[in-house]
Length: 235
Image 1 (cartoon, one colour):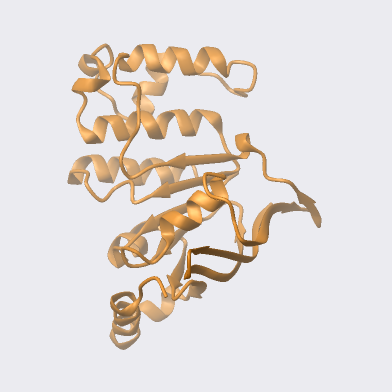
Image 2 (cartoon, one colour):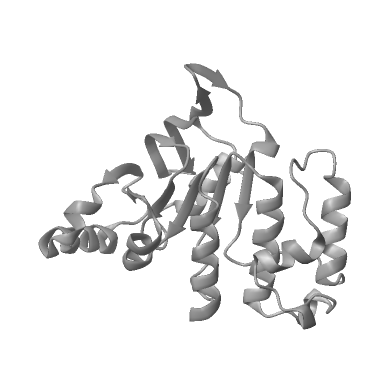
């Protein structure tokens, strides 16, 4: 399975944010979408998710040479600022999600198994989510997206504001779940992308470009990437 973006274009008024974006993402890999703040990473994800309309181009899944339309259930989207129903406890939220999706969950687990998957402490599972830390809300947001098993999982700067322990737990979880899906991980931190991702894709001046990780071992090449990130902005 591949996820194909073909000549995607998006502008706001006269600002071109995405210009002729084309790329093929392969199943089983974590892709680091690298770009400075304001380069258009969130815009790209919002276009793929359907939250923003595109002004040109297309995107679709391709399997065995056959194009497949992108359905809402094919996509998972984890926001940088987690959005959860704070009037529910973690357990109530998980139960609600499992109940409404029970017909589509292929290998259901117990609630406790799901909580263990994201390392949510037993003492926190019955607390209202309004009292959760940012990291705990992030874990719950990640958990429901994992349960849904989307073909394409998009993560928009999900680790930037987490403490070291929680961030490492989330990285290990993402590595363990790469098979059978495509993971697109947005970040502006080069070292984080290098540590977690199988492939690096640079969004610069409205276009996507594959970056060879082997080249990034060279200090001069890494400096060129950093300079590109510094100089990029909506054009």
